[in-house]
Structure formats: structure tokens, C-alpha cells
Length: 118
Image (cartoon, rainbow, N blue to C red; front, side, top):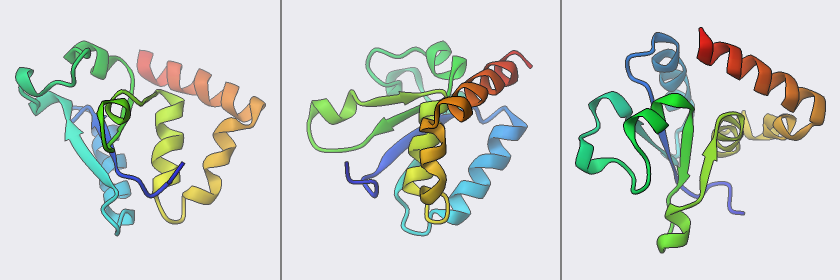
């Protein structure tokens, strides 16, 4: 997979932690490989096909931006979304593999679920 391929990140603009994290990632994304979409200001007609606002707010979503319908259906959700963002960012891409290490992945998934409940 081409890791510099553009991705679209759907984030909760009402979440202070999410806004802080997006600001950090935007500063690092000097190549502008990531499109940031605030779910809270997204019009109903602009929601991705097959996704509701609650779907997108329920868990972190990243979508591949590419050529053809197949690319638009390639979603990364939750911890996998963070891994995909990290693969697109200089300085982070070398650490994205950590999300695939079994123990780290499991701990990350538990931590993410706890964050969602909070």
C-alpha cells in the first residue's frame, strides 16, 4: 500500500481532546496527505454513503481517498484508524507498526474503549 496516499479523517469537533490531536497532526502533515472532516459541522447530504453521523461519532473513522469506488469503501476504524493516520505522518510512520504488535494492540483497544466511555 502507498502510505502517502491521501486519507480522510472524520473527527468529533466538539471533543476538546480530538481537536487538540487534530491540531497536532495537521502541523506534522506538511505534505497535506490528510483531509480533516469535522463530523459535527458535516451536512447530512455530505455524510459518506452507508455511514450515519452516529456511526462516525461512535468510533474514530479514516477513509482511503483514491481512484474508484473500491478506494472509497476502504475504512479504518478505532485503533486501526490511528495506525493509518500514523502511517501517513512523517515522524509517526516509523511507529505505526506498534498497533500491530499483539500486546500493544490489545492494550490500545482497551484504552480506546475506555476513552469512548469517558
